[in-house]
Length: 278
Image (tube, rainbow, N blue to C red; front, side, top):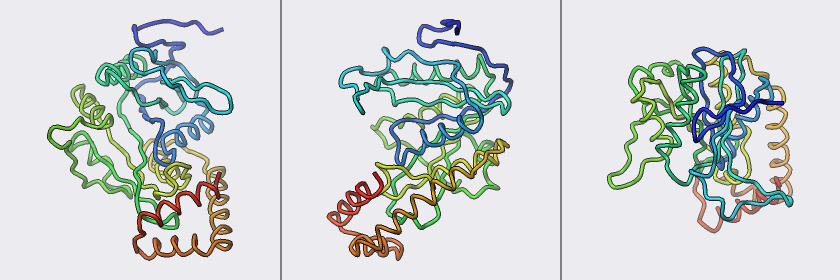
């Protein structure tokens, strides 16, 4: 039986993993192509990740209108997993509704006090008008010039300069990078481009793009065989759909040729893909 120790009013610690100078991977739900949750669950499965902490939801989430799938209520949650042999922490969380600053501070308190975090990688998916047959692109934004140099030798787009438009609220990822910078913690946003018609389903090819970067950057030794099979199955189902539906094939062929689609064509393609892959 786990002993539950409350170290903060907002967080519960179930165990204290023996890790020093760990890396933290931050993922959110929902996300385009399920990039965050896909990467988190794959790493936990392959590296034996175990839950060691969680953040209490009441202060940060609305419990009205809780989603129900297959007659099961899904309450918002924020869980931390540890992979001690790899000095790795993984956070999988719903997006908070309220008190972003306090929520992000709580994340960093857990990461610093328990695992002496040395670097943070924040994952996300980004919709793009490209086809699924086009190689995925990984874009990065770092919270310092020194951190930016850590990714220069990888196959990523690292020359992005993003500033929140005046008068608008910063994204939660940008906010996290800023708070980490105030604490002297290197942090990087990783955005994988996801074909727009896979945004609401899943894009295992985007997962692999992010996982490949993390695997090399953090020396995780991830086994990709199961993910490769998943990618192959999805591509095969899409190929079969193209052979059976000429209009579907026409839309995808135009995207592959960098030709745009009308709004109605894009919406029809999304519906066809959802019917095909779900």
